[in-house]
Image (cartoon, rainbow, N blue to C red; front, side, top):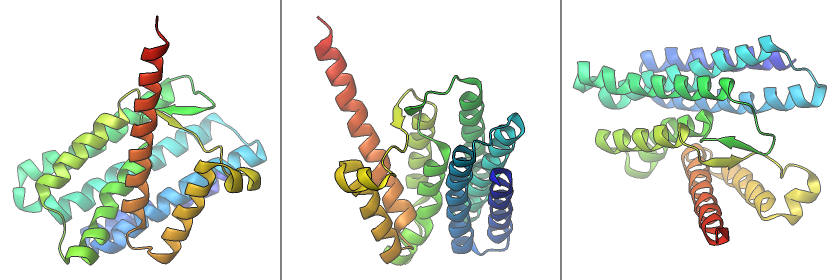
Length: 227
């Protein structure tokens, strides 16, 4: 079952590539988000069923390379960088390279059960792809390409950094109601249901801001604790 979900996510990632190539940019952005959501459920299914395998781990990384690496690269090129010709190709491809480095680092590291080291690539990719429907509805045109370049650089640095991103931990009924993170998760789900076109960009951007605030507090507390 987990591998079947991974393959389903890979299918939608490939469909996102074809949609971008055919000029259906908003559809491509939504398909990238759908593939990312499926990626969450394949991991949850593996934990629930205690179904872990080296094949599943490698398949998950390959699927992520396509869905949050290659698909956003082609979407960004079609939406923002196509007029830049060779420079646009190089800038767009840099995103795939950053995601590949992030995934290779994740596979090579010893996993910690409580947090990720560096920003995971799915939320980073959803900020980029989600910028298209967000800006299209708000301003009726896409972001300036240089804004997207800056956003790509910041997200790439965060993916390859040592910033701690805490894992789930708020999906039990009790924690959803009684923890701040759980209530934030519920609020994010409600927002996504009410305003789906802007949810990927707004929700995942908010996640990054919360991660940076928490990391800053952790480092300040660490410095204070040092005599």
